[in-house]
Structure formats: structure tokens, C-alpha cells
Image 1: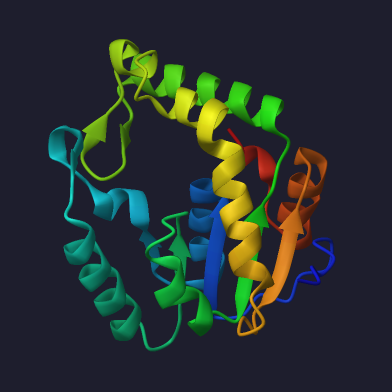
Image 2: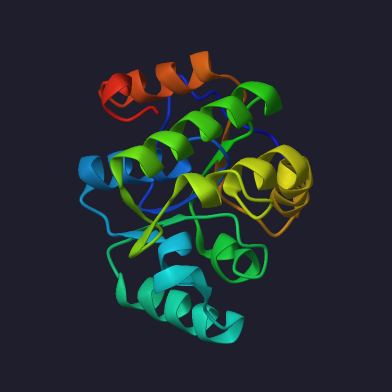
Length: 191
């Protein structure tokens, strides 16, 4: 894998956004910028009341949406079972490979604010303070499993069949600069 400089991006029309700590915000910003549909994997996976969708059904939905988006798409999500079906089609990958501790703190802050403000997330679901601090919360997932998830992304991106232009963003400073390089104001999107 030979990542390109995130300060001079050339964004294609079939975009995968991976990583933790801002991928959905970035995907939505790119969707606004490009007019491409955003396929948010968490919103497909999580049915109301945090019920998990069957993985085969999820794959069918995602591949159908990608096939229907003939002008391009933005796939937002880290699902390792989806990646082999979408990554080979991508012309651009943006990987938020951000530092673990600051990202976990940002995820915790965002999760708590979402719970307090009753912000709808992941389709038709809502955080609560009870779920925010449960062992199944995104905060604990990020803290405990986030590194393994990032390693899986690195392995998939290193695959020689991947032909996409890869932008690896390794700091929040780089992420803010990436937004600015696309003429987007980072404070409108970063949480």
C-alpha cells in the first residue's frame, strides 16, 4: 500500500471510507460535495432497537445499492465481510487511521452527546446513557477492538488486487487539512 498525500486529494466517484472517529461525518461531507449517494453500512446493519441484520441480507442490500448507483457511490463502514465485495470496485479509499486514545475520547464524547441530545444514529436507533456505558457500546468497542479493526483494514488495503487511490489520514490535523483541501469547513463536520 502506498498512500497518497491527503493534502492534495483527487477524489473519484466510487469511494470507500474506512476507519474510526469521523468516517460517517466525512462520508456525508463527501456526499454533499459530490452529489453521490452515501451507503452507510451501520444504518443498514442495525435494525430498530439495535437488532442486527442477517449478514447475508446485509451483503445483498449493499451490493444492490452499489450496483444501482451507476454514477458512483460512497460506502461508509468497516464491515470486514462487506469489504471484499466493495473494495475491488473502488477508485478512492479514505482511511481514517487515527491515534487510538484521542479517537476513543472523541467517540466517547460524541456518544454521550448523542445520548443526551437524543440524536438518531445508525438508521433508526438512539443512544442512551445506559447503552453508552455498557460493555457493548461503541466506546468500549473502539477502546478494545479498534486496533484489530484497523489492522484488518491495513491487510485488505495492502492486497495487490486493490487498485484504488488510498488516502491514509493519521492525525486530526491531517483530517482538518483534508477537509480544507476539498473546500469544506472541518468544524461543520468534525465531532
